[in-house]
Image (tube, rainbow, N blue to C red; front, top):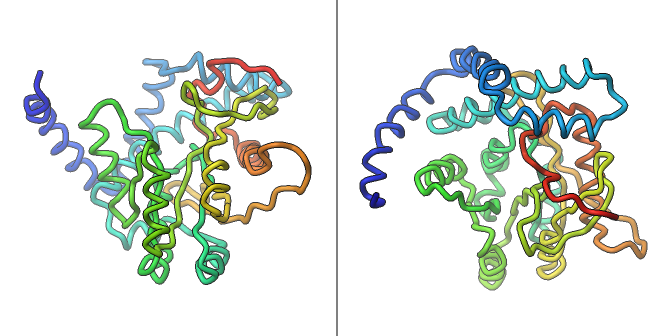
Length: 299
């Protein structure tokens, strides 16, 4: 089937999703509750992966405790779906009411010093709403480029939809393959950048990695972010995402100051430690359906 024919077939889906996105979250959340039950109890979407991950990462918890995390995770995951869909038509005013950024003074200080920033964050709900950061810092948005690195999706229609969502509030989406070139071009043009890196993903084949103990498991962590930070002289921060209530989030911007020792990949190790603390605070907020440990490693 040609791309044109595919687009024609998917056009009604775009119209339907846009129409649904116009519903307020108060109406979408009951749908999310039903979706969570269907995903967990009927379709059993990646349920084996979720249970395996939770059992290996939290062996000290009882089976009942892990089931409660599992139940809450699927509810959070369903909330993520409707919240992300809502971004298609959500007004900037509503988004600003639903997200809070703390620690923006750190970013302002770095920008005043002429430094570009690399922000480590993760698949903690709702990571898509982080792309609305320009709304929280309009004075910065007028002079710097906010962006996030992403892996293009195989489905072109879905990829286009996600790009539309992620760029609605002023952020720039940078394909992983072009991030170095893009940031070098920005630096050459005197443009200060604040770029988000989702560094908790399973490494792609051939990616350089650092092996460490993460959530009780030997884990290969992506080191490309740290390599880029060193190469471009970026300042690193960590975005700590927290759900304050249903449909409301706080993103705390934390400076990253790794210890001065001889251990390799100090920023990557610090990121893993900070992320683990975030996950342990509320395990149901992380994306457990991701087959993070598909390829076991040794330390």
